[in-house]
Length: 147
Image: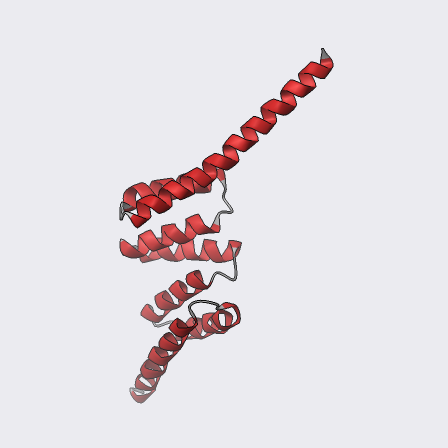
């Protein structure tokens, strides 16, 4: 009897663990579909649900940041980007998005620091860094001239 109980308990745990792990992927995949269909409210809900099941899902935080970027909620965008980088420090897309926010806020030292990190990790978006640094170079001399 005890042996049957152990087997039953083991199977029960395996089935529940499988369901939870599959549901997390399902929430992210549904959120991605909604995001691609420009249904941002539905996408945000699915990404938030994905985070509930897996708080270490950096992609869900990244896509939440993208949604907040579209909705022009910069504080929420920045918080989600920082969460993305805490979980995945080499996420070049998150670094790039934070660089753009810092540039908008005129936080040039943060842009330079993020740029150094970006150069180390960039694989796909390397040209973007050059554009941001060029913009930064065009802005900084103007700031110095006004003194």
